[in-house]
Length: 201
Image (tube, rainbow, N blue to C red):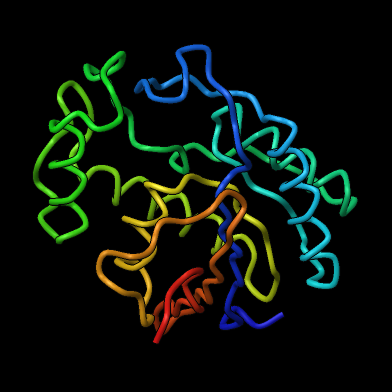
């Protein structure tokens, strides 16, 4: 196989999940899939059945791992956890509400390409982008000429994918629904991004 063959990464958000802290409270816990989330994961597997997926990668967080396990089992392919794919940590904001200004203003700055702000006690946008990009690059290097599924998280995907690959993505990108996926062609001449779910021309 030519070393110049691109890798195809299908990067998907995890399925709907529940958390012990409740739906409106920030937390870094991994979460568990709801009944709806399991249905969404099964539907993702069915949508990808003809794509000849070689392997499923997931972030280490529980909701992503569980989503990946459902898909991998349905497709009969191996599954592997990959550090770096996880959502950005809320860190010191754990226990605050989702609409806390310290989170919303920081993430809005990231999406506007100011990556220097840092979530209190957590990561800057630069750090999130660096470890997310490193994780995807390592996967791409292992799968030249193949197609793999990568289960990650909406925040990391919306920040990282438009900045790592060229493609027509609105700014800010539309929020990703659970199990929505974006296709990335990763080759030696750069990465290209497929259509963004929910985007209109």
